[in-house]
Image (cartoon, rainbow, N blue to C red; front, top):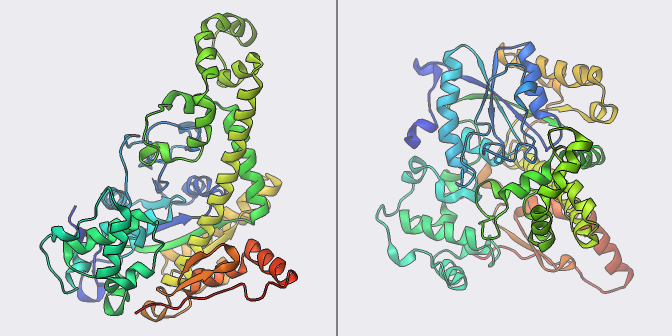
Length: 475
């Protein structure tokens, strides 16, 4: 798809058609996004487009928590389990796949609902620039507005074997961009060098001046978007995702991971990046697993007598228990705990990203609170506090009603221009082991963190003197 088609500049005042309206349901994992999208079908003719970077792949339905067909209540779901698990489905791929889907759904007089927790997928769809993390996929029309070469300069193509040389090369050509990242962030260093080799444009220039005014914002999108965030408090989300992991184990998560296990597989691409795959690798590497499966035929008859003709979904876990191998059982328990820990960390990253979209990029996000419904597990509470509130927001949006904030708890944008924001200053926190923070927003968020505050308090009590250092940008 031509990038020029991805970001329309249609202006109804110039006689062009009004932008298609799109609902975007965001929020941390476990908050209830998918359920809300389905429940909206009772009020609007919706079709859902999945924006979860792992649910787009075929396989691992339990692990990735795909909505089963029986729970979709007839609501069409697109990009759900349709991509080969062995390929890398990028944010640009999502954007290019979602645009024709939105057009088709709108042509059927239905309402497209983008639903998922992968925020960089959503930003790739509705913003003029893909996120900084995917800088190599930035839109050519945006780059064309900047002066520079259009010929590939092979002297700046990043080396695959020598990452240290890549960082030194970036420092030579663009010290401002180099100062923005950690020297060990090899992926982004390579992206910046590739961008420069392809366009001749300094990476830092893309995020400065006129070119930066629309970066990350939604005002230039070809769609009229209503952003809805389903959110809950961290303690409630933590408990919920832990319980959900236990349910996944009961539903056969371990069997799914075993079925795709390959000791030579690339865990940095495709479906194997999902939380819950790598965590079980130490267990699956043990010889005990192979020995158990060699004896599976002998144990099958006993299981059939106990469980019926069909083996239950958690037979691998049962086999582990029957083996009486304490090492394997310990590895399994440790893996389950790691899945819970990493899922809790994902929740926090998603919350930070939502805050970043609002504070740095001026996104207007309407929040609905699912805390009580998750705590009480009450369908009635869910209906009143989440579904009905969302319906009010959507109805106002579809009716061009500007008074959304009175019913939805909208958090207004800061009103700051992007080029005035401090995105490039590098801060170093000595108290936290020389941790590098990029920009004033990350710096302020870091200082509010519980871990940072504990370290500061401990160092003060020990009278160790200055423990915090800020490093200003190098120009």
